[in-house]
Image 1 (cartoon, helix red, strand yellow):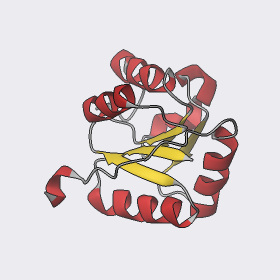
Image 2: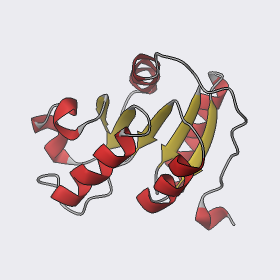
Image 3: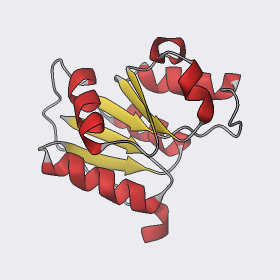
Image 4: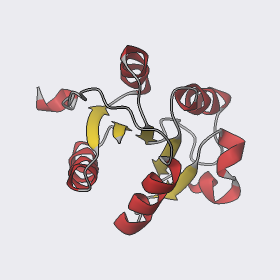
Length: 135
């Protein structure tokens, strides 16, 4: 499965990318929602795994919900976040397939990825995009 990982924490990006690659997925990484949207527009993806990029820890902003829904128009989305408001919302309210709260169990991540990514997979090559701080 082709997975786009959107995460600004370089260590978590590396860990999640290695785990997903080890499970046979092809992973590309973006550190910002804007970079993710550029990559999403350049080819087809089977799944997006994304951090929350809003500034509010108490509730999702309209802009954040719009970003998530925009990502979801390209592929199913699994959100990984430390935001406390996620305990009070259902994934469908945000337009995503699943929400995992950091710190999350890696087995839960893999189950969510597999459940959200069921469906046809994209068979074209998947470039790995490095985190900006690694350049």
